Image (cartoon, rainbow, N blue to C red; front, side, top):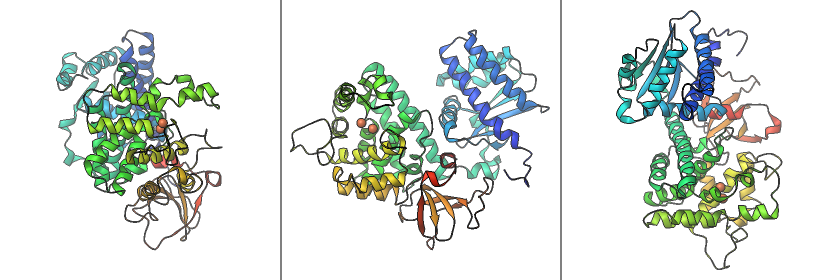
Length: 476
Ligand SMILES: [Fe+2]
Ligand SMILES: [Fe+2]
């Protein structure tokens, strides 16, 4: 924020994320604890404190969930990268209950808010969800009012709100729904010993639809790594990248759908690897490495437990087995030399490597930038990958993948947000600094959609060369 712009609403910008964090913590605690429990009571009071802060001398504050975004008193709540899982998790909670907004009125007290959450939690059942506003009224809760999603008149929304329903907004919703849905699938598979394929298909379908419509915002979202749910986002990222590569290679829709599911489940065998080994930040001992290398086979075993046999189950098994095998057979598991790695496995292997080396420091002194990762795949490790798949990778992520900080011949510094299927050299960008070196203000945030034809990238900056908060800009 510049000194010339006092922004009277600035405190709202800080309190909005606080409100979402507290609300999400209350809902999470209510899932595992009774409302009388101390843990729940603590969360409830923290939430009340934020609401009190918001009220000030206003009569009420309104939290609305409209067109995939949260609004606090009509202003969009902007999420930083770390807040994204909470943001989209909460959007899901509203959506499941057909809630379009909640009004918190001045005078709200703890007992009333506690009762509200009891009813809110119970309304997860769709049969009860639509009765929620009525149930709340009947319970004589006067200071919390639920606004049904159906009652929000979209025509009445401000221009800003309707404009948000852009391709990028939709892509974010699809992406985060997939991340949170994958979390559910994996947590359940840990218990049942097998993944729910139908659920996986449901998550992947909209990804395939976007890619087939050449809407590549979703590919750009794979660059956001800075959040707690990365383990699950990795599965989704690999799925998105694989579907993109499959499309570049001309695979038909049905195969793309199967590829997306197989890619989503490629690491399912890791559920059989002890958590200490998976999370160990240091180098693995030979025994631990042996356990880790069993995950492709364990994945096959888990997919074999899925009921019914279809092309999809066969493809998933094969991708589980072969995604670390490498094109030159230098990977694992060790297998007869004349074994051919299936096309889908070759695609997933490249997507997996690209995503992993841009997220983990274990492979390098710091996670590679997406641009460095591309150079690495096309350079020293290219013999481990199918050349056609590497070509498809460049078609999918572009020459300057999302997250790259670009210096152009016009003197701008821009952040690549998503690839441009028309021209891999000119991604969709957010401008970071003007040619005179002035930072582009968050309020005036300018964009190239995509980079103009007469602009050329002259250099890609390394993270050491700038101090720009690229993760938050990617998430915005
Ligand atoms: Fe793996
Ligand atoms: Fe992986």
